[in-house]
Image (cartoon, rainbow, N blue to C red; front, side):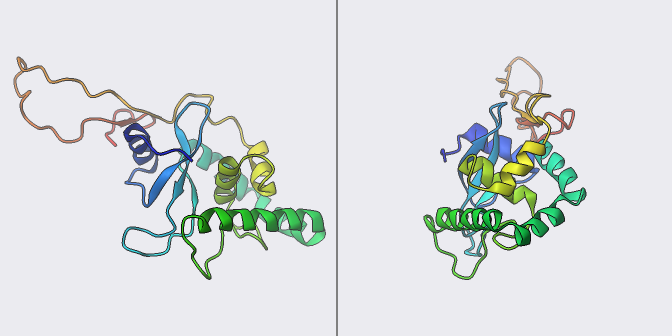
Length: 193
């Protein structure tokens, strides 16, 4: 995990369309360079438990994963757990890895890991986020889903930050404070983040 820069925070804010909650760091970067998985704290600032340690932020990746989920893949994966003891053991190990990573920050007794681990496949977004953050070979279903995804980064970054332009004191209204300037979402045709 790497500490998020102000630019990373702005990208994640634009990706999510809101302020990220309990952001601790960037857990993985897309090949385009933007964060695509963040690590979150086990508790929100108000103290509420937030057990989702790895959160997928890239809207293009999330959309592609949504297509996999709607195809019935999760049901098929869950059925394979009952038939394949080696796969079930690897998935249990992924669950234990997830908990160990979260518990290294703060233990949340009684809270599950994520994505349905270790007994079912409930959310491919969580499993892919874990696979990206932990690296290949840690989460078998996260790895499998990743292998089925298109290269979502091929079109370029999902979010591009525009540099703040310096004000020209000669322009009328330059001294006025205009809200909504700064980061722009690449897919929103100029909408402010």
